Image (cartoon, rainbow, N blue to C red; front, side, top):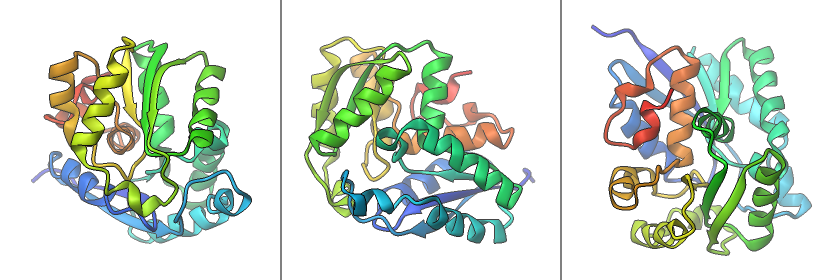
Length: 241
């Protein structure tokens, strides 16, 4: 019997995509299971109210509940540090570790690790967000030396509505940004149904797809000392070292 691997996942309350997708990814790893804890997130915007949803105290309370399940690693499957600044996730990970004694990672920290592993400097960005949120993400990547050479966003604020974007629409957007010849494409939102498209996208466009549901899972496997290459059919990133 394979050893047990329990992955704890912090989830925006209005997200309906990442849980089934993460569970499907977990099914690809013998002995692996995913366990979820929610905190309230209903809109993505730059207003004080919307930014306040990501106060660490709320996230840490959800992490405490995952710790009760004795998970092996805790992952924040959300992209808020894209507009808040990457230091927000670095600080959160440290606080989770200090509070629970459990290893932690996030969607964005894992994405950035993957970009560094492959030396990606030209990135294409596909999101459901509004233009001002998108610009914050572009600016934060520029600060770490990564140019967003093409981007598409859908202008949606309501987090629940992101999951209603059809995969075919996401594929259209990825085809559009591929024209700028990026070294990778990221679907940067964990409430998009994009992760299962990776294999087809990469075969058609010849560009790796780094979906943030998948990057969270990759980062959690790494943090737990498990081999991400066990995951097949979900994109080239799981073979990256």
